[in-house]
Length: 246
Ligand SMILES: NC(=O)c1ccc[n+]([C@@H]2O[C@H](COP(=O)([O-])OP(=O)(O)OC[C@H]3O[C@@H](n4cnc5c(N)ncnc54)[C@H](O)[C@@H]3O)[C@@H](O)[C@H]2O)c1
Image 1 (cartoon, rainbow, N blue to C red):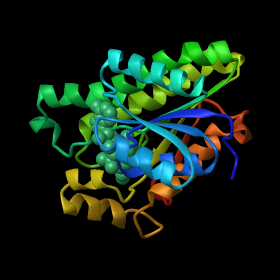
Image 2: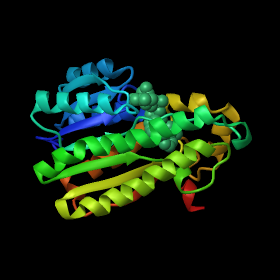
Image 3: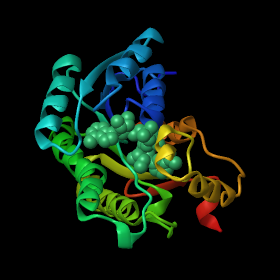
Image 4: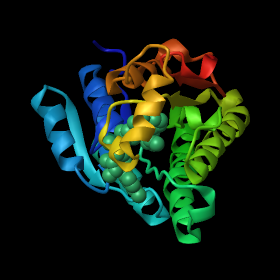
């Protein structure tokens, strides 16, 4: 129950779905949790506190660098430091590339890829000063295999995997581990952005014959933010019920 005791972790996308469950999991494991999102962040922080954990909520638009600086400053002020970052916030859009609008492509990149860039850029100076740190960036199976109807989403998540690997190499010698986690299809509100037939097609393609659960991603993120994974860096851990292995 204390795999993260003494650590402060900032989780983006903590207002919903996978990020919310990661916040609960980290709270139970003894971390001080900074629940960051554009909505739902106060509710999640309260849930973590009600369950006996330590947490604050903070409004953070991951696509805005100023917003990141304020959130990380708050984490350091409230809890005396920052030791782990889980970049979970993300959006998705199912569309044919012919119909994909430039503004929607830019929005996808701004949230899913630039948001991860800004997060790593903002916390790394603190991690270097601490002499350690953990970053987990949520990508997707769409970064590894071609999936129908997700051109901008796939591109953004491919960027997350590549950037995670690069930053991992750059900071491995300073005891900072950077990994990506690539979920398959997980039952969260984001699936409402896909037409039901796309969700069905993805579920049918999963050898485990079911949707994944957010706690099945949270347990991997927990492992990668704990001391148990200190020799693991630059990896993309695929958690997908076997989908990508076919
Ligand atoms: N659910 C799946 O099947 C699945 C599969 C692969 C990858 N993922 C990834 O997992 C992550 C979490 O998704 P989820 O399934 O929990 O979806 P979700 O919609 O439940 O949660 C996403 C959260 O990100 C937040 N967010 C969106 N834009 C933001 C911004 N600009 N700044 C801060 N927060 C913002 C939303 O408010 C929301 O709370 C995403 O990165 C998603 O791409 C999900």
